[in-house]
Length: 182
Length: 377
Image (cartoon, helix red, strand yellow):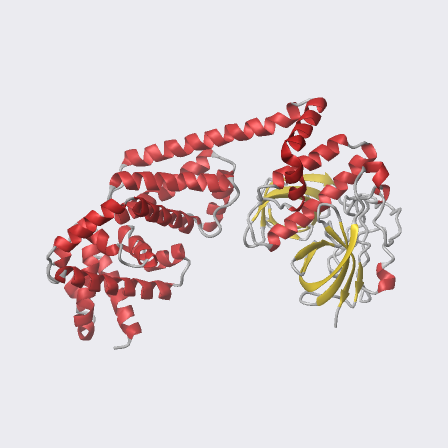
């Protein structure tokens, strides 16, 4: 559960002063969400480990340097996680190519799509969406956030997230069809 | 089919499925849209994990250990840097300053004059100020302190105007208190219970805090500097076209609010009491009953000594035009923070949004102190 706004401000102020209890509380509150987000998008627990841990170190550095966060803490953390995931894939083109090959080799039909798509293939398909669509689906389906929570994290209206989610899934459906024929 | 109907139906199906409904029962709610919704929902099922993703406890613990270790390291670094300066003897401090300047710090020190809290060169600016204070005699020291107090106010206003988060400190009068929200020197300050001791409305306080994007400053420390209700000092300076001398500076004076405020004749007649709250006198009339008297305050910008006395360069008189964006403790005009004080002359009752012409003193650190603000037609 995200922290209430006044609690969050107080915690951040204490964390900025390197208060260990405040840092522990923030970590305890958000680590699980950030880890699941990273795991959903990368599919590798060791990468999710690194990314989730790095997100909190960056928060600490940002607080100490007087820079963060400008929006909600939760949104800031997910934003950093998203950037780190993108960095990870930029640094790992080989893995990306392997996953693309795996997708191309798969011969699913539309009726079997839900059951036959392997986790790696799913992630490869997801990565063909726009960064914003990937972010939204990871929040919705990887972390299980509601549309309202996703809107808050992304700094968008609920209506905008519904449209974003719909278009992302529509694109996903098309990509799955491409995969079937490819 | 209208897209918005389909989008809402899709979202509704996701909701009921998240609550445990099957795909078929979700589709049964929208039989006329089932053909379009089915492949979409199948796609969602393909990318939604069948079980919530598990978070290994050891990963979380390892991450926390790393985080706290980094925090401890930063704390130690802070302690070392903060502890260094007071431990140095005067000679060692001077040697360090000379070393810093000789090692190329002159450029940084000069460039830092415009630096604001949170910027890379701001610590250099403060170091230079500290060095100036250390080298000053008693009279100059007081004048410099006043000048630096003005800088802190102008810096805080600039950071608030930029809607940026940064550590700030300033000294000002407590104007109002509503719960944890205080009005100090024109700034909205959040002061948590117990932080302020016995400070209250009318007291002069020094605030350390952090500006927020919404303009509120969250105080981390607050110290009372002077009680409200102390006898008001008599100003020794008459307003003039030249900046006040050092001995004339530490006086809070302000033109009493009146319908005629802003006329040249009146603004040239500062009074001895500050009738409206605010560490920096604001030209905006206030309905708040004034404190009965005002303690001596470091309010008048202070490069007040002559060259031969302190080596501080004389300020330069400048003129510019701009739109009034803020009239708080410090005015923001044309994007520039301008300190307004008792000697500032207002013409034409300038208000927010007005195009104005400003005549101001520009001090060596870039601080602008308004001599005259005139509304343009």
